[in-house]
Amino acid sequence: MCGRFSLTSPIESVRRLFSLSQLPNLGPRYNIAPTQEIAAVRLMEGSGARELVMLRWGLVPSWAKDLKFSLNTINARAETISEKPSFREAYRFRRCLIPAEGYYEWVTTENGRQPFRICRKDGQTFGFAGLWEAWKNPSDGSELQSCTIVVGEAGPRVKNIHHRMPVIVKQNDFA
Image 1 (tube, one colour):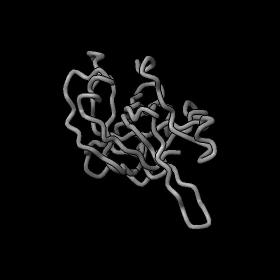
Image 2: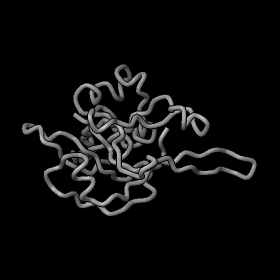
Image 3: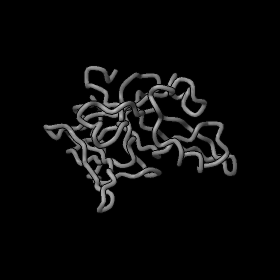
Image 4: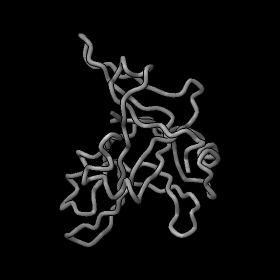
């Protein structure tokens, strides 16, 4: 599960990590929430070069009637991603990487909910596996580009906090 994450890395390190030709215009964000615009790295059509774009977090499939759909699609389960109608087309044709250097999970304790920030030991930026989609608003014809974060079973270091976690793509597997 991933309901909040952060991206506070220097923009030059984001550019280098994702091999972007242009320096992205990003400021530090410590508590990124669903339905907000988030940075995503995808291949530019035609050239195959990587570009950083801002997408709404909460995937809206092309066939959705309205934006309410996106509240249920902030995450996509890796195990069923190729089968679910909401994600099937994006999984086949519109994959992306979502830069982050940490994400949050909450554990319920007797004193309330306790947040945990999960990040690399070295604090460096990484990429979540993601999918993106373009949706045309039926009422005014405007286009919205949105995305989802792919989640899978939690690794051994995270299992005691939550049973699921974002799929983190190794830099060698970005392509």
